[in-house]
Length: 449
Ligand code: ADP
Ligand code: MG
Image 1 (tube, protein in one colour):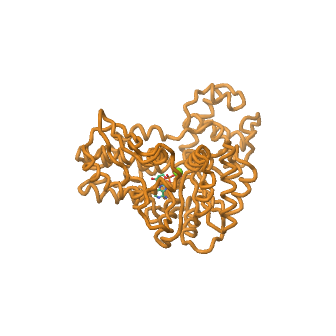
Image 2 (cartoon, protein in one colour):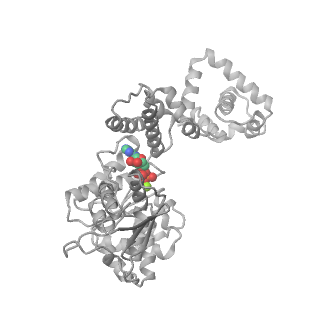
Image 3 (cartoon, rainbow, N blue to C red):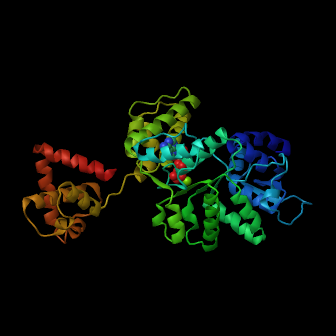
């Protein structure tokens, strides 16, 4: 492939990374050689090369691959004759734009992560509403907006959606989105190159700062210090800040107290684990999208419901499953049925079978029957306590892979025959007692999420 070939391919990257990133980071790349599976690009400065490598290497590689190029790695090397001295970020960007250069180099925004493509359900409605409010760009009412939640629940998606929306509504705003890791990386770079003043100036000149996965800077003292000052400077200027993390501010170990309390000053909202309805909604939306791509693929009714029920981990896994399913079905040219789904996704389905612990079972059952957790393992034999205990034994046998002696040990060192008796008792009662069987159904559902 020649540089001309590359020029064609890179056009596609424009859609992927957005116009600004494209002009700043992709267009200046020159393909210098393609040799032995390595595509080498000439870059004007070391900083430029590092930045592109960190943020775009994967996209570039993917696009080369889809165009059929024989590559398995991309490399960025200094252009020959280029000055070897490092250049500060603002100089690294080619000076193509007018002098009132409003762009601040952030991480690329994923064009798919918009409000339109975000499915709202009970677990995320608050986070979504707060993100919407910030995206309106009106007067700053809470600062920062702190979004937290487990992996794959949509934090990054919401942050990108805010950035897209703000950029559409108010193109003149300087919106900077980046991960905490990138923040650190750039800070360290600035220290090394003795350009901390430029760094400070850059970060203090934005209108909206969004830092993703802030837990990353926990324990990294000088980065925290700098983050704290940046944060305060922006808040003082009444600039909006949006932060995300995998847990609540107070629970991030290794984060300075003053930062924690600063982070808690604004609006802290969490994204709850997805529920069945939200998962189904997301699947339906994605399936609709796939239908536009694979027009003649049929999907049997019940398949999406099955997936929403069985894959209760994060949304990323759910999406991956659907992508694989559609790709597979289109390859073999078959309708997506439940059978095909189970074959195609066997590994994912197995991995997402939720592991329930005996302790969780005891806790849930005790809660449900309003007895003490200690009575689960204690000696009391009155029916109001013994029956729930037997139910917990039964569920432990059903929902975990523990042996009877093992279960016995966790019920206050009871003998395995006692456990067996308990399990049998519940099995007997279940057939006649519909209240009990309803209870069991519900407890199972609660425990398996
Ligand atoms: P996080 O940053 O919380 O780990 P992401 O924002 O990266 O999670 O989300 C993981 C994937 O799941 C992304 O592809 C995102 O588009 C998708 N996703 C998560 N929540 C939703 C939602 N409510 N609606 C649509 N897609 C979602
Ligand atoms: Mg994320």
